[in-house]
Image (cartoon, rainbow, N blue to C red):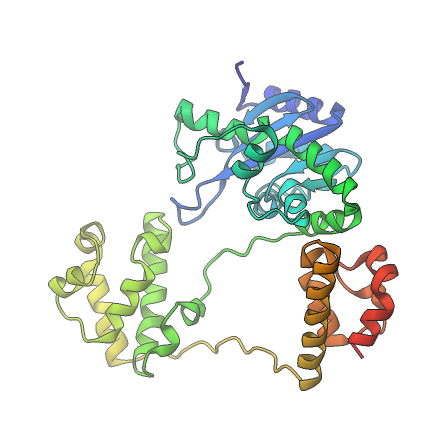
Length: 368
């Protein structure tokens, strides 16, 4: 079966019409985040009530996706996703589409207590089909796309409707419909957290163990690496990885041989070696002023007591009902109750009427 490749306005009009008249839409996206500094959605796969399409955003341009805004934002049309936080975030970021009516099959599998909730595992468990895993790191900006990679991408929406519908039934039988719906609303509202953070070096594993003279050098290298990555359009970690950054600040580096010995690749050394050495010299001679680290809110003793009581109760209730702990009390709800107490349970995020009816009195007691 040949799946239409959509790269122009008339094709997009056909997709929009199919989506508008479909009872459900299965959707997946492929991006080039592992291959470019500024990532973008490079492929959108759609199964609209059984009609499949592959959309080429590179050829279409972002404006063309306005045709899909109405059906994808219509809560009356179910949008099947799997692990859809990223899909929801980038559809909004790149195309201004806030998807509604989402049923996320990974959220459903997790709510049912399944240990393996990846798409391949769920498809195999429900349909007995083993999916290829060969293209998980493929560069989806390449044109033309490898036919095998395209088949891999299409499989993400070929099987998703049947998988999601069966999970929907299993969730209903387990009496977890409302809990799953709340989790799916959180997927709809997921946001993209990318972009350069000047203070991101504080989160590099091992950075906090560096001596005070080394941290400004790491900060300078962090900014230098981002500039080079932007210039050559590569993810920063593919210019120099974090382990190598740490190695470069632990002792004075003055030669190319030292850079190479510590893991800087020739592809970076040849065009940028002198710039890197200059950055190290300047940072050691004139340490830059550090951006302030993010200050974490100090947790009050009463919050710690509430948290312990609620976690202990949640674990016991989870075992008693034989459901995952998030079915009893989601992490965001617990965090809110821990901090603010249970004065108005309708304001607690991701709690919902069913949990209030089941556990309202107990939560008020625990969060006192």
